[in-house]
Length: 480
Image (cartoon, rainbow, N blue to C red; front, side, top):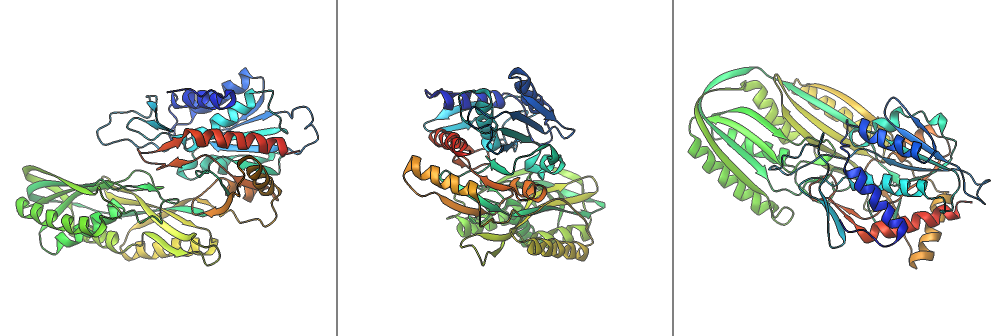
C-alpha cells in the first residue's frame, strides 16, 4: 500500500495498517485492546483497560492549553467481518489484505474495517505527536459497537471528566453528525420438529444483491435476500409439495442481507427448478434498477430420505417472512429526508431445533422504537415463536446549542471555503450512550468518506482521510 507524503497523514495510515494486521472482529477484542494498551505504555501515557476490553488513554494538554476543558476523542475497536463466498479468510487468525486502488483503500475479499479502524489510527497519530496543539485528550476506544454498543454500555464514564466529545465514526466527508437513532435487537425463534421426506434435494441460492448498512443504507431501496426467500417459498408452496431442510441468510443484524441459501426436498426437482427460474426472472425484472446483479444459483442434489421441518413450523416460517415488516416504516416529520423508524432482518438461521430470526430495530423516536418492538412481540406470539430483546441504546437527541458544532463549522469554512452540512442519521452512534451517561455533554461525530461499509466492497477515500485528519487537528487547536 502506498504511503502518503504528509507526515501526520502518513502516520494515520501507518497505524491503520498495523490495526489491519490484528484480528478485531466483534466479539474478538482482546488482541486489539492489548495493542492499544501497549501503545499507551510505549508512549508513557496513563490508561485504563476495563473488563469489557475498553481502553481509555489520557494525554495532558500541550503548552498554552493547560486551562482548556478536556476533549474526548472516541472510536470503536471492532469491525464487521464479511467475506466473499469463495474466500477461506479466517477473521480470528488472518491479517486483512489491504491495497490501494486510485484514491481508495480496499481489502481483498473482505470488509476493510475502516469503520472504525481509521478513527483509532487518527487518534493514535495524535497521541504519539507532542507537536500537535490540543487540550487534555481523553481517548476512548470501545469494544463491540457493531453488535449493540456493548463496550460503551459497560464503560465506567466516571473516569472521564470531559464534557465535550468528538466521535470519529461518521462516514461522510464535509458532514457533521448531530443526532442519531436509538436501537434494539429483536430475536424471534420458531421451534420445529423434524419429519422424514423422500425426494430429491435442491439448493437455491439467492445472491448478487448490494447489501449494505441497515441504518445508513436502509432508504436506498436495497433488497433483503431473506425477504425475497420468503416470497419465493410462498410462491412455491402454492404449486408444489416440498419440505424445507434449511434456510440461512446473513450473519450480522446491522447488515442488509445480500445472500440467502434455501435447501429443499421435493419429488419433482426439475419442475421445481423450472418454477424457481420463472419466478426469479420476474424478480429480476421487478428489481433490476435497484439490484442489477441479482441472480439465483441451483444445485440439484441426491435423492433419498431427508429430514425436513414439520408442516406447522414451515407454514409459520413462510408466513413470517412474507408478513413481518422490514425496511423503512416511517420518515421523520421534523427533519427532511430522515428515516425515523426502520427494522432489518439481518440473520436468518436454521438451528438444531428452531429457526431464528434476528432484527435490528432503529428509531430517532424512543416511543416509536418501543412501539415497533411491541409489534414484533405481537407477531411472534401469533406464530407461537419465542422472542427476546437485547442491546437497547437510546437515541442521541439534537442539541440546539452546541459550541463544539459551532467550532467545527467555523474551522471547516476556514479550511475548505464552504459551508459543511449538519445532519441527523438513521444509524446508531456511541454518542447516544455517552450523552445518556454524561450529563450536559456536547457531542459531534465526524469522519472521512467511507463507502459500502459492512460489505466486501467497503472502501475508504485516501484524500478524504487526509482532509478529515487536517480538520480534526485544527478543531483541537481551537478548543481552548
